[in-house]
Image (cartoon, rainbow, N blue to C red; front, side, top):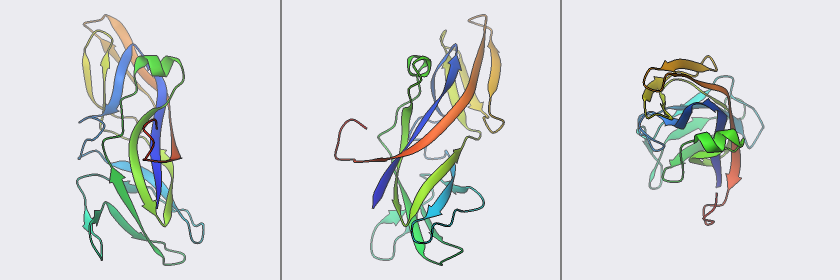
Length: 171
């Protein structure tokens, strides 16, 4: 079992608290990324989608969010999401180039790669205006905050997966 934390970053202009629409542990938010088989090294052609509200029973006990068989070597692997470890990307973190932890994935037989930003994000302006259902599938988001009388933008979004030890408090 290997735990991978998904970290996100980007340039936030006059925005803060960038995260999935329902918060970092939004059960309806769908994560899209490719998977690499740890047995044969094959990478999935298309992104796999995983969300907290979709669970499958495991053969012995418990549940997981994804069971997938490698198309090349036919080995089966699982991805189980572990909520409660994420936090939104703030304006301060963005300005210093830091990444915010978003979600932990317990991967067995697979390694997550190439997270794809899509729709379903939210952020708020420095004046408190809320921007819901931000779509980043095109890469950027730009609007105008009437209350704060300033442009707001999310650009240069980036993501990375890093192996984490959940027994440590500082991820």
